[in-house]
Image (tube, rainbow, N blue to C red; front, side, top):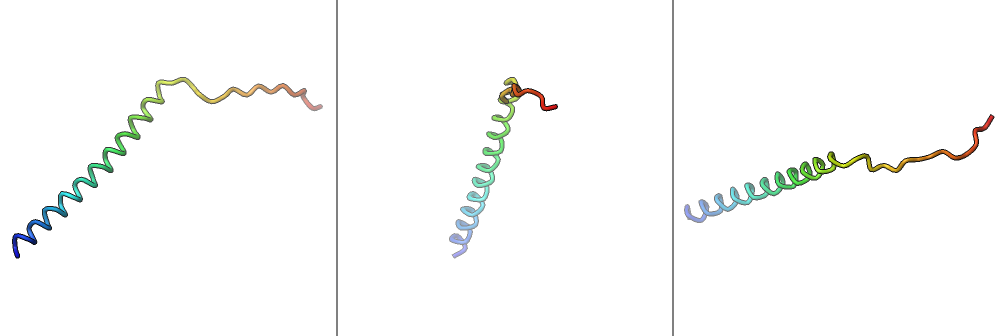
Length: 55
């Protein structure tokens, strides 16, 4: 019975560790993508006002 409890505890610990690692990998992936965009120029469209001024 002790062996079964020990195995369950180990499996729970490994599951929690894997879940935390997956969450950290997702955060690192997002950070890398944001850093990649920093090297690009401003990608917002330029707006030119062509209407005549109202007096």
